[in-house]
Length: 384
Image 1: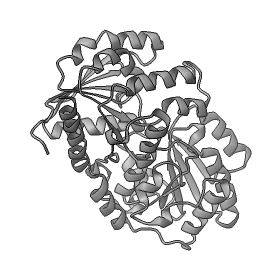
Image 2: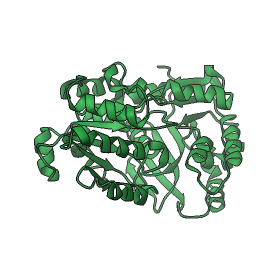
Image 3: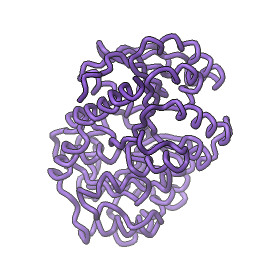
């Protein structure tokens, strides 16, 4: 690594984990801790309810409430523009909040962490508020100031190339990291189930997702209805919250699946390792726009294999562990067949030890942080 190492970084995030969970916020919290372990001081600008100091080297400044109107939040971010001027480097994780500062970003080394095509995701979910065209303009304006880009998968690197005309020479692919020690519970599967008061002798499939349409939860529940015909003992646990929660509850009730599908609601971060460990396998049935899927290496770190649909960057995560973990498609039939093959032993799944060793080798935060820091250094040298 070069001697040009940033010692003071200003990072523009979305929210902190105390306000809202989710892949972007989990990544931000994880990379902040890992970079602090490398001696890098960081000031995070986010929306939130209070300022935080997670460690001596990490300060989190809540510029506005996430419940404020979008214009209020953007103005609040703009008022913090003087903070970035003394930074060695600025990183951004959400184009919306970097947008008010774009004029200053032109004159500082800027690394964009690309977590996904914001405008396209909004279009898929039919979200109200800023329209898709405005969101796309915001993204293009912010990305035009980027000296380097970090994506979590080659699939999303390709999105940057083709949707945003970003020069491939500026893009680096680095997967998300996992706190390996946090997900190593030391529990057997049965002990994990006892602690959760789950049934000991039923095969259990786990899905940890934000409850929105593109996550494939409706398809997963329909697939479980078909799985139940030949495996009535199988049970699906869905952990997470989101706007689709009432509709999913209705589907479960109307389909007579109350004994087969349980909606767990929000699972706190401290409980997630035990929940992963208690399941025989986890599944990520995403239908579109899945650049990485942090729940996949989390599940592996807990010792539980993860089945994935062949969407976005998810196959990249598990292919070198076992290609049998990649379903042939994302339809109800593909999900049903994949679950039945796994539950009936027709497709062997990696062992607990194999999953954990793979997660340690590929996704441990200390190793990931060094790679991220090398890109930050590269951006500073390119700018200078």
